[in-house]
Every structure is written in structure tokens, then in C-alpha cells.
Image (tube, rainbow, N blue to C red; front, side, top):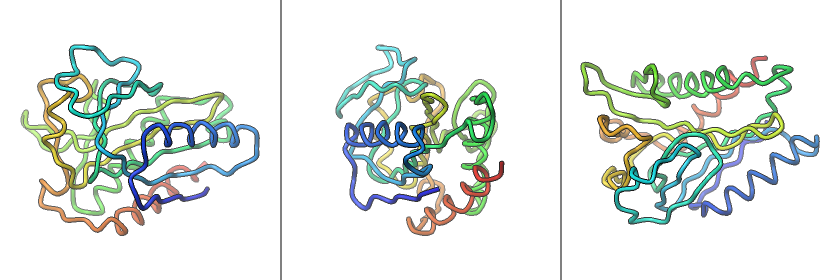
Length: 208
């Protein structure tokens, strides 16, 4: 598995084109699987289930994307990891529910290393923190699979400008807010976060 880390923000169109090329190469046996760590400039993406009314104020560019899910925000201070894996190596027929569970588990284990309790919530994709009606989303998940190879992936809010989420209804859930590691009092070094994500990712995805 190759680990790629982009040091400067990657335009969304560039990221999608790069992923599509890599997915084709993985499927053809011409490239290794890949975890790609990056940030984007401020933008909104609309998944395949996005509803027009959930785009409240398009203050940043909006991109239609083939991943599952609804509207989400990407921008500086958010760690995006695009996950390009040949799921057919793990199962004859890819189990997408299990793959999403693995992505969730990856985030939960990573957050735990920084003493943050991330949790699943029935009916709500992503990872949440808090309890007693005060849950807030700290990480988003959006996936697409083409001919057995995954792409898109996860986004963890490290220290983004949380006001940028106000232009959308994040993931179509108006009753829940978003938070970040910084808002929880965790000032996490990017290199440390990437190292933990890499280690936990290999633990999960290379355990076949």
C-alpha cells in the first residue's frame, strides 16, 4: 500500500481526476493500493443523495461528485484521506457495509489515540462525539466503488473554520452540528495525526 501526502491544498477537480486514474490502474494491476492524505481549498461537494434545499448559501464552489451521501464541506484544517483499495482482494464480492464499518472503525481508533471518544450513530453516517442530544459530527465518510476498487474516503475536522459549514445542511442533518479536534481542546500536530492514521489504517485494511 502506498502512502501519499500532499503538502499544499489540492483542487477538487485534480483530486477526482487523480483518483479515477489510480483506480483504473489498481484494477488493471498496474499500481498499488493507496491512502492519499490531503487538504482542499474551501469548497462544498454534493453526493448522489444531495437535496437542493440543503445548499443554503453557496459561498464556496460547489462540486457534484459520484460519492454517496449528501452535502459536505472541505477546506483548510480538515484532514481528508482518499482510500483507493481493491476490495476484491478481501472478498469475492465487496461488502460495502463492512467497508464503511472499517472506515468508521479507522476513525474511531485514531481519535481514541488522542483521547477523543468517537462513536457511530444508527442511521447517521460518519463519526460523532458527545451525548444526551448534544452530538456533533467530527468526521465525514463518503465512498464510491468502481469495479471493486474504492475511492473517495474520510474527512476529519482538525481545526477548520467551522463557520464555513453554515452554507450547507451538513449530510442533510439539520438537527446536528459539527465540531473539530481543536474545538474539543485537542491541538494535534498534523504529522502525528498522519502517522496514527497510517498505522491504524494498515492495521485495519491489511488485516485480510
